[in-house]
Length: 480
Image (tube, rainbow, N blue to C red; front, side, top):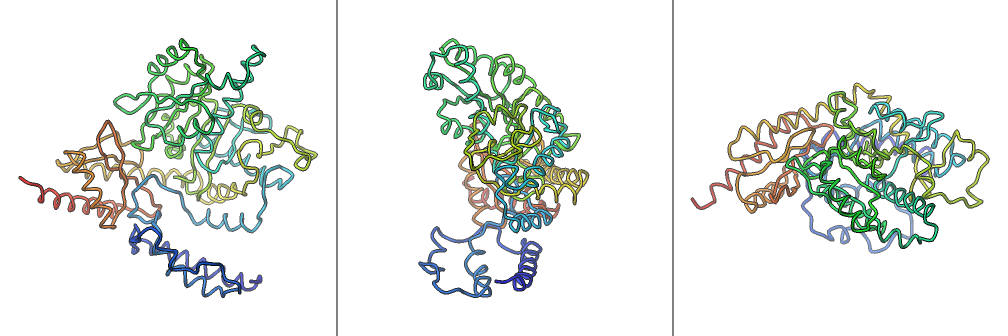
């Protein structure tokens, strides 16, 4: 393919993408295929001779689309949203064309510098404390990670490295292995599974903290377990607070937890993967109060801020804590400006070496939507969730299982877990809408998350009508 054909094919692909998205609600939201469906549709080996572009494109509808779960359908209400916008897609095209591997400032100065500035822009939208901003002289700063899972792991490993160095400074005779064997990290029993996984990868024990009736970790619960663990000879070093848990969008009480972590010299990381986007709205910013006590903070613009995957924003108060844990300086990666203090080499902030020019997506989206446009988008989704909550509350057969704060509604049939499991199976088997469940206080609960950029009130009304109809059918089948 030469440049002339690329121009032609590129325009054709943009048309295909635009048509796909404009007509996505006509497609069945969840695929009707069995595991292994795809292998029989394509050859066992790659072709020896080149095939035409037309042949490849024809196979998109034949091979790929039958097995696609349409995350951007207005009938997709599962998990949490994954962000999506035309400006971000165009920026991704440019990112692919430039094709730099931005592991250092020298590897592509614009890639590094735009990321630093975009994380400052976003930090200011969130009204983060100055300590988290890079500016031109700050000690903190932001970085784009691939996912919130990576950000949690990076924070835990940085905290582990920091505590080991502190203890060895006072007790040079203590080995790293001995110290790590005594370390203990903490998270909510509602925290995402990736937090527990970070403990496994980091080789430290991770304790799950009990939550209150609102599914939040409170200060008294943390204080109690810290005292018990210190008395047992353990070394508490890391707490991952969650703002907007995956099951129910609950919020740990960081205004209570933060001062305890600071007093006990425990690294507090905040995982706000989904909810963080909402903090750009003044009415939701109080949910972030207490961030001033944190050592690191993370959320995913690629969930709810119209920036396509992958783009997980992470800030640290002291970037030296991160760099100190991961810095490696082989001769072939050194450059003249690395000790200038003006630039940073992001390879020291992450697990991989290479990184894409992801900040282009932020730059395009922030400029083409503006803060007001982004706020309006968040508010629209929250309004649609509130509309769905009202519909549920009006039906005496159902109950709301957790506070509806943002764009997630947790609800269930008033009845047994088995009844709710059967209802969910029927909802998903019909493939008109797609939901996933969670468990709250031992109860099987259905989650309704407003996800797609194009979701409107009529889609929410249709979804509830469908759920209500299936519920009526199910109740009629029950023995009276």
